[in-house]
Image 1: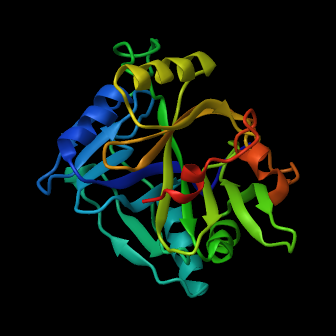
Image 2: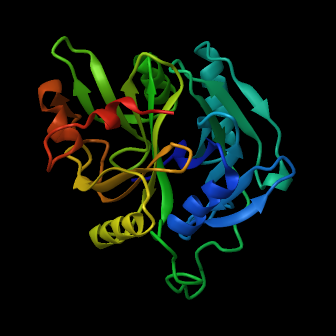
Length: 307
């Protein structure tokens, strides 16, 4: 499938309470590489299998959560087309000039009805530690810690997920792959893809705007999920649930928290999505099995703790 328009998630900026503790977590436990610290104290990191300069940005702040999430688009022309489409639909768009110091090309940004800020960009400088392309070995150096391959997706909580779904599906070209639906037809959770993954962003209906449920990192296989669990126990990390499996997306997963309380996920697997596939739908009476396929029940913390 030729992917046009929005290609994939590009980056997310997280607020952390203590930068040193956050670096131990994201660098030494998850296994990300620190690429730079800028003049504002923001720290830029990436996983070993990512070409772009960074995918995770950490900002020390008095409260936790997500500042914004960025998606990479196919070209500068696509970026301009999305700006026109958003404005024509009445969505205010701001333009951010290129920033060579942060390896970023120009961007456009908008605030979604759920209260989350999103950015679109077409270009980012490559990392010196990006995957090899000439007679490529598997990696430059052995992956560390949990061996995260890439930043994969975010799950976000907010009130008007219908409005945000409309922007992503009607204006940005995403497709609804899976959903949880209440008896009255209300969509409780929506999983959206811009390519061939089960989801690139997920939305859950919640009374507050702008909340982060989790940031997710891809691992290679189920054995790596088990290896990640070993690391979490060895270092007494705060685990939400897992190792387990989802019914939705079929991914094998562990949820855990960074030292500031932001939830992370590491996962492997999941189905491949094609645009001719029907939407997979779960009813709310089966939501326990949808989220945690083995336990077939939700824990309160998973549903209520957001940042």
